[in-house]
Figure 1 (spheres, rainbow, N blue to C red):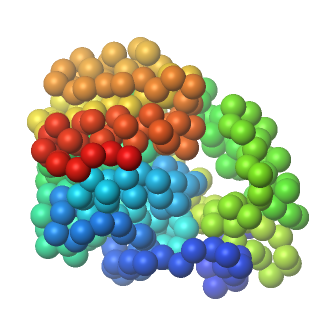
Figure 2 (figure 1 turned 180 degrees about the vertical axis):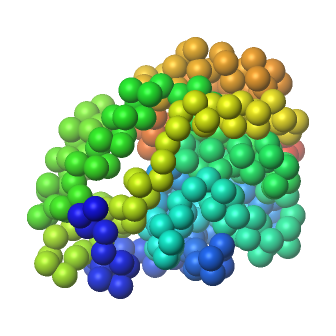
Figure 3 (figure 1 turned 45 degrees about the horizontal axis):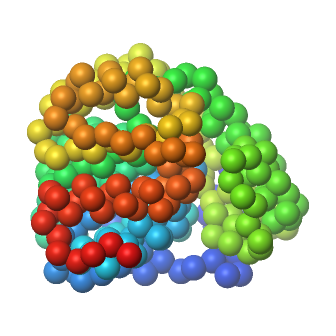
Length: 301
């Protein structure tokens, strides 16, 4: 695949924030992340979606820290500042193994897991298959029954730009076409944290393009995630983007049938990337849920 150079041939762009934390995951990979709040507070781990980075959770991490939690957001293997898998293994099982390693590095105490899309699948499988013990689970626009057309739209966007971009303006234009509902930022400088530079000067997304080579069998995916949903016994919240083309009303109802005790919320004016589209509404939903189940005393701001 074009653009599949190793991390050694990619440079960080000026202005890209340095990670504040590092952990060792499966295959000996170094995983990067950020943390907020008191390390003695309830542990909350934030897991981003495919093609995203830990930066998707910045506002949420600060909100949780203000509420007394110790929030950490990690770059999944092959994403952001985490190392790329030498074997190209970006399977769910590999992601779960990485998550287990991060939890173990924090003394093994059960965390709250907040996972969007790919990160939600990692969390659901880890907990549902008994491989990870957690205190609570928040799934962001991810259910066993996903809409194939929505998944195809995401993958098509990720595949479109394998030769990279000539400028930040080109990146901004591509994002605007993909997410027309979002207001264009006043400056493109905020995009640098999601990009790397190649030796030829072109800009590439901050993830290993081999991630897209991971096979996706929607039937097998449904069967596995359904089995996991049936096994959930911990407090669970599903946050869906009301305009999502990945999680439909039918997919939502199917999940609630599989996991009857789960709470759910549809966020108006949000699509698949709920936290990015409506960070205010998402932050309030997460706060309300966790304040009830973790008995947090601080007030959200």
